[in-house]
Amino acid sequence: MQRKIKRKLKMKDRKTNFDYDLIIGQQGEKLVDHIFKDSTVEVKRDFWTGTTGNIAVEFESRGKPSGISKTKSDYYAFVLAEQFRDEVIIIIKTSRLKQIAREYYLKGCVKEMGDDKTSLSVLIPIKDLSNFAYNDRATDTN
Image (cartoon, rainbow, N blue to C red):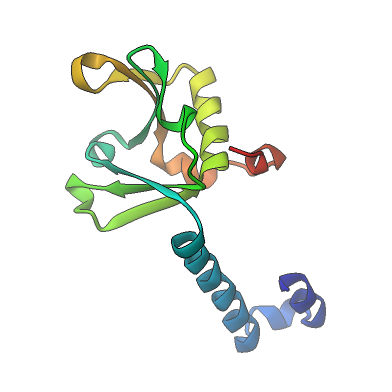
């Protein structure tokens, strides 16, 4: 749908064309509606992001795959607590999060966490979630 619109409107018209902006906004609304109605979302509440600048993505607990290694969810939602007062929620497609987590795992950004430090998590700088370059690996299945 968006491609047809782009062909009809010249580049200079897109920046000021209300109809185009309205359609793009409606497409975004449909995506959010789809996420909450038709997709599974794994929700994590993170109390440390405001202090560390990272989100923690668990992948192992007590020596066994867990968290992102085992999830069947379509999306992850990180509710940022403490300094963010639960007012910021980051939603990211699980396949894309896996791609980013792999990159940081390979960089050695891993920390023991949880009760008795029995879980392993990849630490991802929150700023890098939006800066991470998209490529075809992000569309792989979970």
